[in-house]
Length: 82
Image (cartoon, helix red, strand yellow):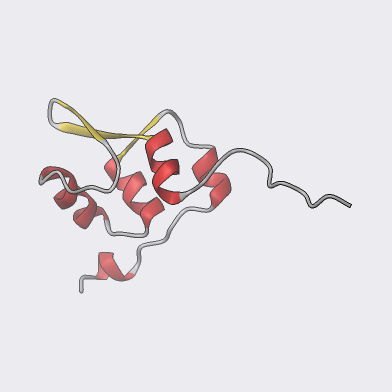
């Protein structure tokens, strides 16, 4: 395990909801709780858990797909009927 792997810090639900329409693989990997290098390795071999858009040499992840994979919605939780 590298030091980078040992220091991966995920994102909060609020941070995920505040993300722009697409993010880099590093940000998506952080949200998923995996290291940057592992995220890029998964993206290169087509195994990243979200849809990855390749634009030239760069990779982008759609935030809507990232939210879907994480089960994060922007809707308020339902309240119990009284």
